[in-house]
Length: 139
Image (tube, rainbow, N blue to C red; front, side, top):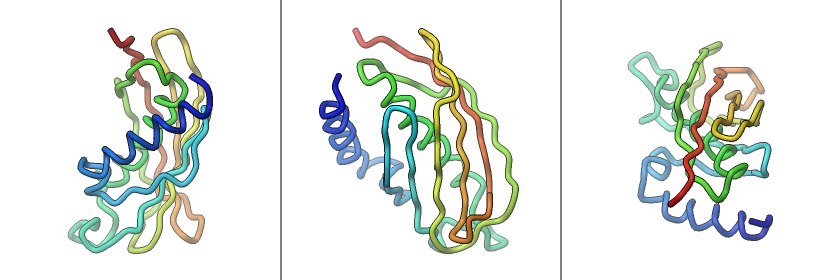
């Protein structure tokens, strides 16, 4: 696929994703290419846990989603699924915008390894992750 075809595929996917967990969370894809994706979220009260900070599951979902988009863009003719994910929580995040930046670390024929960070509006690192994705050829 060329860049224009990949862009159209991502746009279709994001439109369809509005009715999935992506849309439920309120994610927004800000930037992407074959090596990096940037996803933002305007953190609202329903994203917080009982002590008023961003729920760990939301951290994880944002980072997994950003890394998954990067992996999918790198292999547009295949499906990719998360096969392993490591999370590290470094600072609390509250209401306001958070930004996930994901990039590819390594690719082989059947595996893509990625890393991502989640920072708040003050550019404070709130969490980071690494993930492996299995490449599945479409039949």
